[in-house]
Amino acid sequence: MNNVTRMRKPDPSTPDETIALMLFYNAEVQPKESIGYVNGLISMFTHDRDHYSKMINNLLPSLTMLTAGELEGLMSPDRSDVNDHRPILDASKIIDGGMVLYMGLDTLSDMTIGNSIGSIFLADATAVAGRRAVNERALPKANIFIDEANQVANPSMIELMNKFRSAGFTLYLFSQLVADFIVKLGKKELARQVLGNANTTLAGRSTDKETIELVTENFGRSILKSKQVQHMTSPIVSGVDVANYTGAYGMRTAESLSEIVPPEALTRLPDLEYFGTISGGLIVKGRIPVITLNNRK
Image (tube, rainbow, N blue to C red; front, top):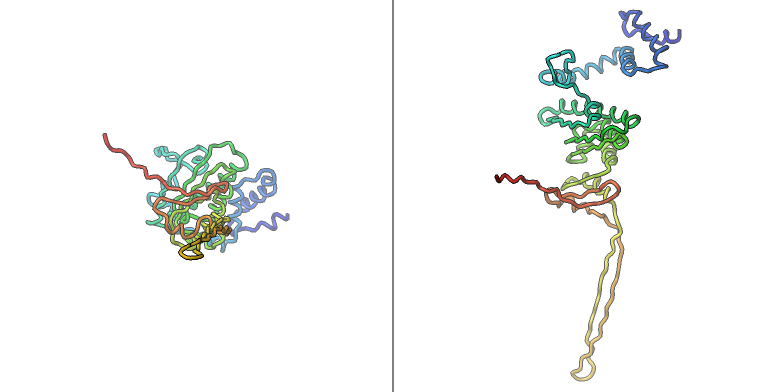
């Protein structure tokens, strides 16, 4: 009876049979075997009607763009179409199968669609990471490359970075400025969280003050020793046309705490050169080689 009083009809036209099935699931099935998608359907069905309408109205434009034109067949394939021989893939099949995925999000042409597709994949990949971290660590290692990572930065990406090691993931993020993450995520603390979860950081030339400050923090500081050598000679005249000389020699040492990589160094790096902190605390200075092909026959 308590379940009946708590279960209110979302709409007056809802059949009593539907309410009865939901009550049966909540009382008999869910305590023994909770089914995720059924829970989601019930939660959506019993959600406040006015609030649900507002959420749907905000989502409809994005959903329409993701299911129109050429994207319709890619994002919403027809599983019953026997003439379509393309495999239907999701993050689980791609990652667990050791496949390689390249997504050309083209956010420069349409940022809304690009961000939406990237966010959907990251959310799916995060769910896969959670499952692998708990149950299936022996699956193949997964490498995920995210170009212009700031464009698709969201809480799912942060969660993925939190779980990637235990889930057998290696995540590569490419971006320009720390400010880009701040703008996308809305808070400086979240941008710091992204950088803090990175085991390895490679930084090329930059003139952005905030980016330089956050990156050089990872390099840390060290005690630098300096030596200053002094020597002196002076003539002493004694007698007629006789010159005697005296001399002195000394050395002074000093210690000072200074940045291992000064911020000014990042502003003057040549093309393809970088400073980096490698997992384990190793600090490196490197140069990316330029690979050229020999076209001679």
